[in-house]
Length: 175
Image 1 (cartoon, helix red, strand yellow):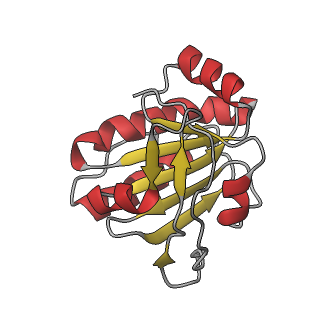
Image 2 (spheres, helix red, strand yellow):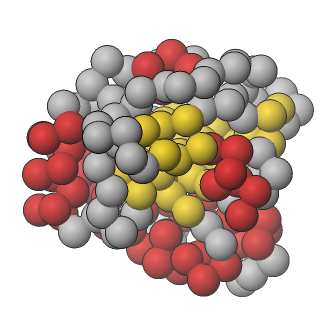
């Protein structure tokens, strides 16, 4: 599904975001609108349906190399309710060109000013934020792994959330 959004935050209430050693917290209330204002994506409504993976990303070479793993991750859990929302730190036109060229099959937004990075207090590019059904942030995974390790780590967590077997997204590390 190709969707052009800008990160026009109609409502942002930062209630805290979980770090690895913090207990889970509610995700911030975020509403994203399309440039024409006709389409709205409310993070709380998305998480009411199932887990959501918010991927704060760009079109740099590292994020580009990770993209196929996140496409595979979405495909593996699509029927289990996972929704991935990639938020690109590019102008809408550049983000749209990139998503068309790469065949992105999940929701995406353009946020050239980095409003969502501030909302989620993210310092890394990319940052992956896994939110469970109901809106609790259960994992924040910053940084880039060009070999798909981050997508594999998230696969195990998503499988746990949706009660499914863990999908093999990346090749296991050689010993």
